[in-house]
Length: 101
Ligand code: FES
Image (cartoon, rainbow, N blue to C red; front, side, top):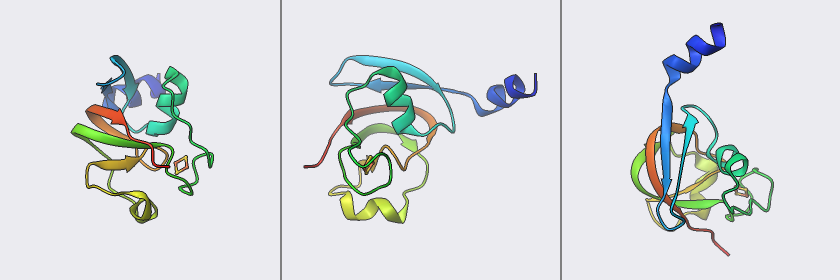
């Protein structure tokens, strides 16, 4: 009961991966990388989520994620990019995969 109430407070987000033509729902507060892995979104995440590669990078088209973390900055070429392993859902989102090499 407590967990159900917390989830209701946190809310459900809709994520739309534009280029992939995939839409999914996830709880606000979840890590984006984990949401992608659970949904079978083809994201490599070579370092295992430790902000040491940029293979989990995404490009946010609309919506917001949690605040940018200092660990992400060396891997981002544009303000619309984020590392899925460092970003948490805060609301609805449109995005594309944008892995670096
Ligand atoms: S999984 Fe390597 S930076 Fe995110």
